[in-house]
Amino acid sequence: MTDAAHKDREQALIAAIVAGETQLYHDLIRPHEKVVYMVVLSYVKNSADAEDIAQEAFLQGFRSLASFRGEAKFSSWVITIALNLARRKLRKAATFREVSIDDPGEDDNPPVAPAMLRDWREIPSEAVERNEVRALLREAIAKLPEIYRTVFVLREMEQSSGEETAAALGITHALVKVRLHRARMMLQKELAPTLRAATAPPKRRWLPWN
Amino acid sequence: MELECKHVWNYISEFLDDSLSEETRAMVQRHLDHCEICSAILDSTRNILVLTADDRVFELPVGYSERLHARLDAELRTEQSGESHGPETKSEIKD
Ligand SMILES: [Zn+2]
Image 1 (cartoon, protein in one colour):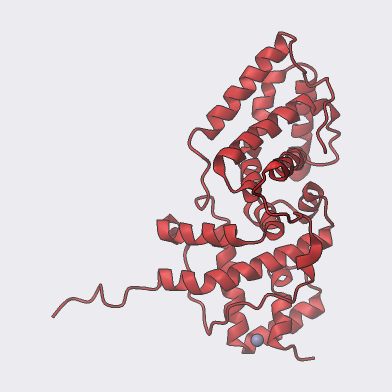
Image 2 (cartoon, helix red, strand yellow):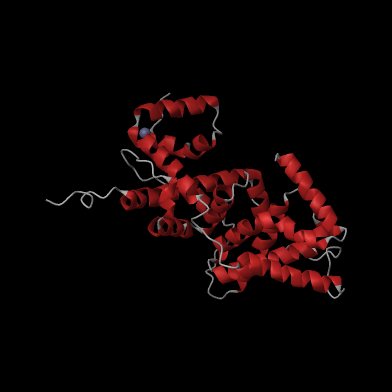
């Protein structure tokens, strides 16, 4: 489906829900369940909290659906609701260290130097089936500073466009690009050596003993 | 103009997204053609992005979707019995 056709279908669905066919809200949110959870999880880092906030965001989205004007995609709109809820939750949590999620300070830091390698042996997607590899990937993403992690989750993992990401986070498209680049370089630096070691072909194990 | 490695690194994201000007892209490509370090950085970054975007890396909690739709059903029922706000009611969504 083209983007335009997709948007038309979404608009029609929303109009029907607002007109009273409320059960259709189930269908409207189904494609966006994962992205909302993932984005919230990138903030709160606790799956139970992330689930609560995601549920709350979808309920709020339902209650205020009549005010959705369709300039943004529905997913960006719900993500914005979810992020506001997540921020509120973090502000309330006494243990949360006082950094602003939109703090531009880190964006002025010097460029991230990548891990230097002389060559790269392609790691196939099947490697993700290994627990050890999944854990490395998850930990590296979790280690990203918040401002980069959220951009990374939206752009890279959920394939939102630069404009959608900027709209959902309330930052400029230029800043989205800067943060995405830094996030990618941080991940390369962290993961290139560890993934390579984890996926290196075993040297001895396959040799017949003699 | 010849690019240094550290300048090439600044362009890696845009190179991958194919959002560089033709001129800059050609300049980066010329560097990559003879620099195995930058080529390896580019290849590893591209590879890592494919892996991190894999659906299998992060899983939703078991029962997440069922719980979400059950809660929504409860909301829709109270909404129908007129006790709660329906979508006609504008409630605050922002801070
Ligand atoms: Zn180089």
